[in-house]
Length: 351
Image (cartoon, rainbow, N blue to C red):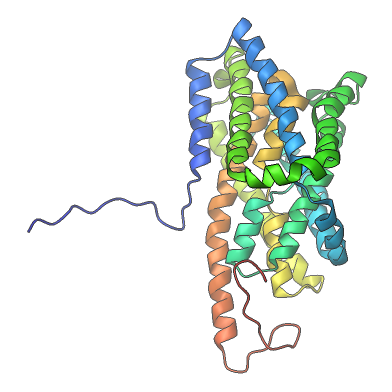
């Protein structure tokens, strides 16, 4: 009886998101076959429509009632918002000292934009659940961050990045309103009638979301390739960018965890704060970059794409470690929680 050769499998602690592979393939396609001429105009128009559709769907899916109910835990949500829209931007501004020795001005602009993007929802919930944290709080915190980011991210980008993001010109403000705010508000207003349809077709609309983002990436990198993006970014600069992002992620993970403990949050809340407060949303950031940066969007989204995969890999390892720590903590005889009550086993859904 012959023995079957061992099959190679990706380690469970190294989650390479298949969607990231699609994003990379899209970048490669744009590098080899960039849209130009009339094709570029057609792709650009489709990308603009895709961004508007994305934000309409964001608005239609966000439950206003759930968001208002979550206000009861306002201290936790305020802490996550401060991490996302205050501490992250401050660290991004501090990285200005790395230009031009470590980062080029263009890569630094993308890094700073990364620091202004709202938090994620799906991955924050997933990792909070794995680590046995406060899942309902993670849901509300991610929703609040996305909602605030609709307004805060473009305004912070205009204020901190300046000319690269269009500044406070009437044209840039009108573009933000028409492509981001109007579709989002329309989704909220029509949610009563379309919410059921979206819920029933959640899986199919997920493909619409991801396909729209791939179109935005292809459009941005097609224009970047025609402008010589790969002649402006060397492998050494990319390596330096990854190192800077690793330090940024490690700093936010540490500050959100130990800072939440100093603020008096219990373990379950600290888990939610750490995973919601240290992440950045690729789904929200890519469409915003295409609106705010226009022709320079390719370099603006590159740091965000790299950071997204890094945060998934690191947080997957960290979430499993937190889960094992909770197993050991609750298995000790007579062990009490930080609030003084007997430990309560929570399900992965947080209920």
